[in-house]
Image 1 (cartoon, rainbow, N blue to C red):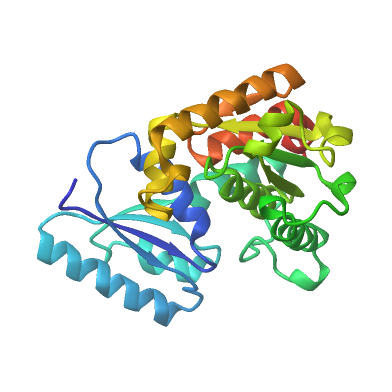
Image 2 (cartoon, rainbow, N blue to C red):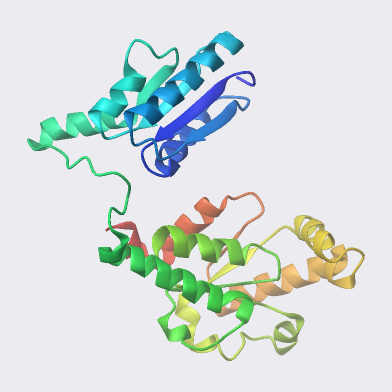
Length: 274
């Protein structure tokens, strides 16, 4: 598989095709070469991709794998026809056509998730959530915390910022994040700005050795990055979260997607149903 090429071809951004395709490819060892071809919205563009696929097939001596999300029949047929030398996995043909038969109606063959972002309430909610998360990153602001859906707490560099932004971008969740610092541990209590919002708090922790590696990349040789200090901060943070009744998990071996889904399940299960 290290010598195979995988194409993700879409009339939109290609994110859906790539996300779905990668989840399938993850079941197999090794990693093929990835090629994303977005905005293939004319037959001419599809023909250019077809030529690229066939050239790769001839050069590598193996069929490229081609994940396709193309809603226009004429454009899709350029790649799904006999002229294509790749193994084509037509995601719309696989899922949309059986659903049309099941529902008894034709799909609208709409390109992309948001055909008109100016009229999409969901899109604007996501933008608001992203702006909120950026404004409340790393404890920058304690204003409007009552509007937060989730407040992530934990020691510095344990993964709060990327998780907050993922929750905002993918789920429209207004996620603030607040670092627990030595002064908080000395007081033995949550910062006063967080105390009224304890029910919205979710904690992240991390293995001290991994934390020391991350911090050394940012501030090499510092007390902040030392293993002893990392051990102390992680232990103190976990003790505080346990004492305050805040649910938490370790980010050491979990992806952002897994962390975010756990947070939604525990704090906002309503956002898993929409």
